[in-house]
Image 1: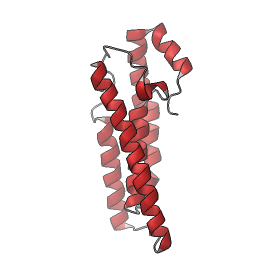
Image 2 (image 1 turned 120 degrees about the vertical axis):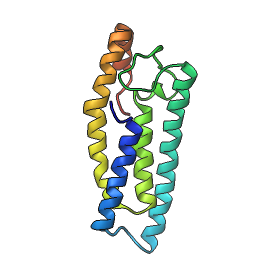
Image 3 (image 1 turned 180 degrees about the horizontal axis):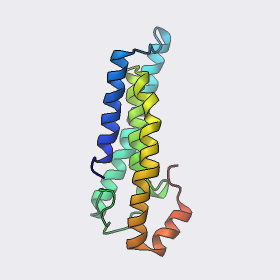
Image 4 (image 1 turned 30 degrees about the vertical axis):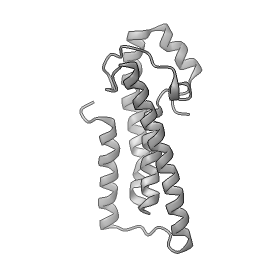
Length: 149
């Protein structure tokens, strides 16, 4: 992966901001605006906590976070008990929360493109490497823990 996955989220969001500037899509105002801010804050915070928890878990395990690099250890605890990709889940939630906070619809509309890229390009590379390194242990983990949620 030439561009680290977190940067794919950031760059796509920035493209959405540019589109918002050129072709504004007006999000709610008035009472709806305060609800959007509250929801955005909660969703952003939950996403940041999940992504951070995943990153800290990898750091404590002493393994890589770079897609396609050989992991030194199969991490199956912490948030990895619930999702094989909690960092991506967290990044997606934080991205969506930010879009709600700033009431920007274009970035939210582009999020499915990022998720498609991660799901069909990045994750298969990661899975191939994990299968190569951990074999049956990883296959068992895949059977018991879902890819996303």
